[in-house]
Amino acid sequence: MPGTRKLGRTSDHRKAMLRGMVTYLIENGQIETTVTRAKEVRSMAEKLITIGKDNTLHSKRQVFSYITKEAVAKKLIEEVAPKYADKNGGYTRIIKTGPRRGDAAEMCIIELV
Image 1 (cartoon, one colour):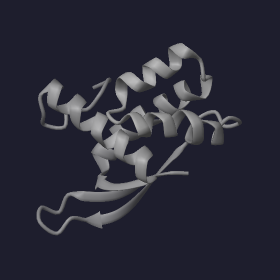
Image 2: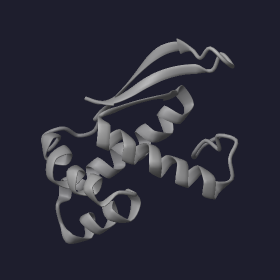
Image 3: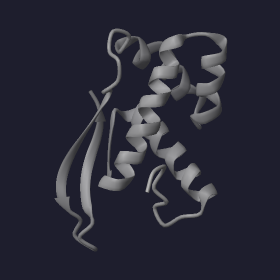
């Protein structure tokens, strides 16, 4: 089935969760989460970094409209995006860490390369 994964949530909850996770990923450089969530976060994070590389007023407004913290949005535009100026994608890496203890969900670490 093409498109985004539903992750067992309503669309509003899913969008809010992904916005928070992308913000946290850019703020800290890496996060630990389940593999399916990480794949969705990777998709959004890479799109935002590509938008941030433009450094136009329009791209800045797009980034500020998605990321929940103003300081993190500035960090994306001023520090993170210029670092990948010569790369065409592949800004994140997913490393599997094994099953979670409580429910055996497949866990991983997603990080900025």
